[in-house]
Image (tube, rainbow, N blue to C red; front, side, top):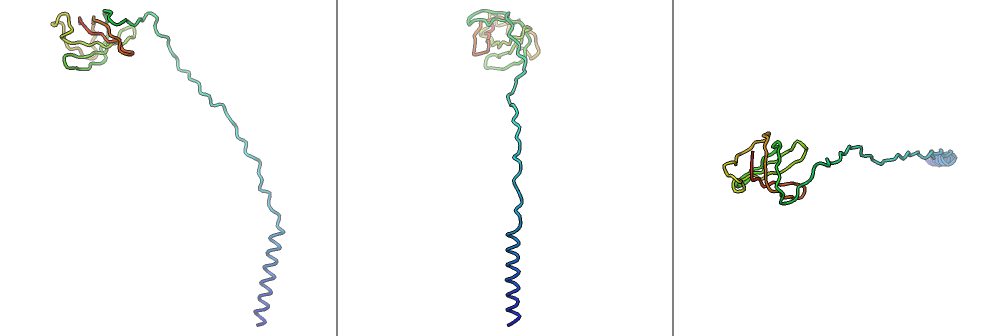
Length: 139
């Protein structure tokens, strides 16, 4: 019994020393300098060059009869004809509806291909931003 009693005293003494020692330790200063956050201006600048429209280009009014010469850039087939996108040398783009019933002389009707240079004459119809020409003559 003596050994057990002495062992208890030793354990109590060690526990007390450990507790007292732990309480006497200085706490480390864990405060740090606050982080410096640099704020930068995030305003975006658009440096895209914009060219003003050519003042010589005038959008024709509905019903005007015009003649346009240019290069065919696209052909879209329809039921009784097709629509050709025409890019003129001045930079304008027209949609030309070419069909036999609209031609002054049906014998002038022919199929055009992308890359062909053509001249069309016809009535203008403005659809949103597109200028549509109902072709009456095709050269």
